[in-house]
Amino acid sequence: MDKIISTIFLESNHDSREADGFHLFSLKEQANYWVVITRQSLADVLEEQVDLFLKAKGILGEARFDKNANLLILYPVQAIDKVDRDKMLQVEEDLYHFKKSVIYYTESERDNLLPKINGPSMIKNLETLILREDIFKKHKEEFDSNMYESLLYRLAHKIPFIKINVGQANNLESLEEMNKGAISENKLNEILENGFFNISETDFNGMSPEKIMEKIKTALPNEN
Image 1 (cartoon, rainbow, N blue to C red):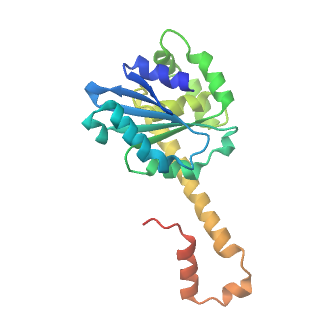
Image 2 (cartoon, rainbow, N blue to C red; image 1 turned 90 degrees about the vertical axis):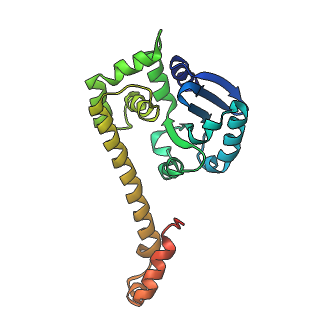
Image 3 (cartoon, rainbow, N blue to C red; image 1 turned 90 degrees about the horizontal axis):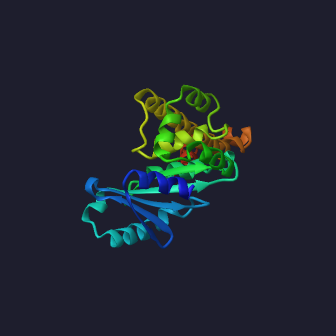
């Protein structure tokens, strides 16, 4: 996946630098800066972002980096059902230091996509595939359970300079919102399961309204 991402950035006229543990791509005339890392787990990404930010800023020496810093996390998984979607959402919604994007993928998705986009211009090949209705249909109807189609649109959704038509962009946003909604629903189900469904009916009936409210507040994540 590093090869695919590097080629996309280089074809988009970004300067490339390799640093200790990350790649740095910059398009200074547009104040466009990207730190790219690969992580098998998302658990420590938020904790390490300060170090990544300071190292990248030191290398670039650009004051504009502060407000134009992007962090792209390549997240390989053994299977799609192994994606930690809750953590991914937490990382992408964190507002500190970087605008963050996560691209998850399996080895088979990557290997199936690469020969489809290899050639004199990887970006043109990507954009040609993106505009094909049969590929977009497969992505929508077999979301995250196809050979490479969903990975193609993950790339298009997370890397803004890959061109995509307006209709498909709107559909991608809808799919993204549906995915986030499913994550939120799973969180609520987990809270209900841990907070109430594992207690007996007798115990529940004996709880006062104040006790029930206290239990709900304890179960809900602290967003402060």
